[in-house]
Image 1 (cartoon, rainbow, N blue to C red):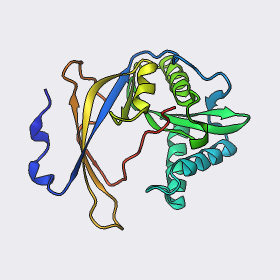
Image 2 (image 1 turned 120 degrees about the vertical axis):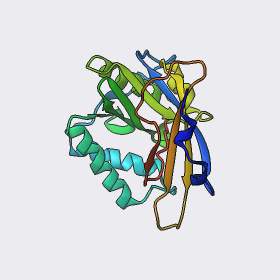
Image 3 (image 1 turned 90 degrees about the vertical axis):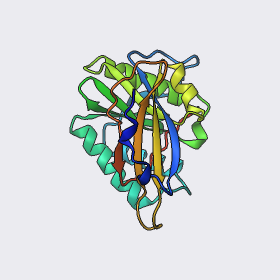
Image 4 (image 1 turned 180 degrees about the vertical axis):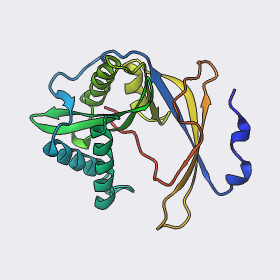
Amino acid sequence: MPDVRAVDPGELAGMTMERNAVMTAASVHAPPHPNTEAVFRTLEDDADWQQSLELTAAVYAGEPGGDAGFLTAQLAAKRALTEAGHGAWSGAFLDGTLVSQLGLITVESGLARYQSVETHPAARRRGLAGTLVWHAGAAALTGGTKTLAMVAEPDDAAIRVYRSVGFTVTEHQLSFIHQPAQSLPARVTRTTLPSSNDQAVPTGLTKVEVGLVKTKLLGGD
């Protein structure tokens, strides 16, 4: 049972609550309609990472978090993580153009978490995200990874994609978000609760406070 005392009600005044699903899988399989047109591989060189930046900019165009300076700094952090051996960034390429991407980062021994599943708006509904999640997860599971995890909005279409390759909801994450001044980053308090009918899996997500705008999981195609 979760420790409800982990969250002080006095800290929640003026905050907005969101509920996300923590999904896990010990194995993955192909989606019902896998994409067979794209080339699925890890990002390898400067040209690939430049395409990664351009893809993220297209996904977040006109939205919070789409500032060029922020996206450039975020890309540098992603690349540093992968080049330090803490995970991999993978993509789906159509005729050499990156149209879908995701990160799979090692959280702790045996556990890897998906990050920023994104598909270009013009390339959705083609099975790219589901096929990429499958390929990246299968590759990780051939190494030392035993459990794959991701966080998704329960009402988002993407959750159907993740279920289709073998993920199930094992925990629920509550996020309490307070936005002070417009010029300051949001403060987010998250508490992860195990599902009532599933065994809890240690995802390393229990109550954290971060000064970063929450990341959307995209790619519901």
